[in-house]
Image (cartoon, rainbow, N blue to C red):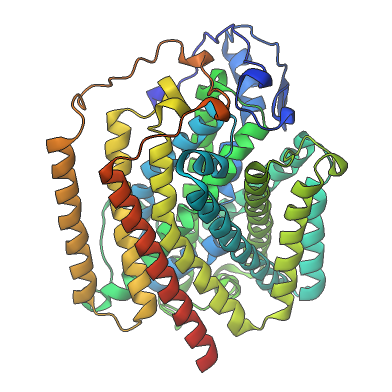
Length: 554
């Protein structure tokens, strides 16, 4: 982690004023008012000594922590609970593999936010045209709205276990989610969000109260294995895809980039924000591993092993294993996770809408100063809460499944856009990707496409065989080798060393969008984008048809 060590020398050149940069909302320029500290806009003094660095870090902490902990939401509780209840700790290794993926993806988003001052959706619109801009916002809006419903489903499951009235619990949760953002103070909102992040640590005492075998967990965390053999490959692959989709979600990209901008973080604090991201990753992986571990221990040797239903049943299993207090703590943790997930998902949508349509979009503004932004945020929360209250248990389960599938289908395209933006010289200048980051991210995109294909095929054809899945994996492998061969044969030279001059990048910001020329689309990129567009269209149509058929048959 040498790349995230805090540099004792902080540039003394102030951030460029909004008029000279691409910042779209002037509320995004000014003092950094974090939950745990404040940094004045004109505070350019070098950070010397541990105390000064720690104070700066505390003021910066937030975006990376919230986006990661928000990812351990209601859907994550179900996914990790299913993995632990059905397969013990044998899928823990997937979390180890996801650590570098999480860091590389979110670090690229962090750079885009701090350097450009423009949200993810707006950058896609400006650099790739109206079609892809509209595509990204519409799909994000749909996916986030459905994801928000699953957060309220988590509220109902937790309330049901705790013996609380579900209707009142959903209404109260919606009121808390809306009120926390409507204070007109970024700092107050972040304090609430970080308090909820601390609440997620309830998973740690649950782990010790259930006391799974730590040695077995340590082994399974580093030694990959596929439980059940080839006969259960299809079922296991679906769980693995769900873990990936739960841990690396499209909304994370949009949320963190916009939240970094709203917090007024600039390139001079990049290394501090990377530490913030690592803190968030550590907490989310510890929480996910703890859930798999204590669910495995709770259901091992019981009739419930291999029979996952929902998070409420997990709470009951924990109660049977270690007592009522453990079940209560798990339900409270689920409630906490559902609320912080709703915070992040709602904000990512409101930020994206504000970016694309040019409306004021900042938590620094009161409701009167950003009516459209707050209307989108509150509207999403109210609609999602209403849908949850009006739907039955079966429809809630179907929506949860649809969200997981849709996220899996859209994730590769989100990562592709992220990779293209991070190689755009006009956008990131000396901050753009180097060869190693590009190579790693390209491999990640390939794996995500493969998992997306498997997920889509398994939903459309529930009885898909293990051989068919192996054929998909082999086909993707061959395609990946061919693409890599083309890149190394005909691609740019000089990939062994970083060819980018990064001198003075701490003070470099993207110029205003209207001054940037549209990037020229190469033939290879046009073919790739066209193939991606066709795949997404076909996959989404097939998934929607299958979901509708399932609902009608029921």
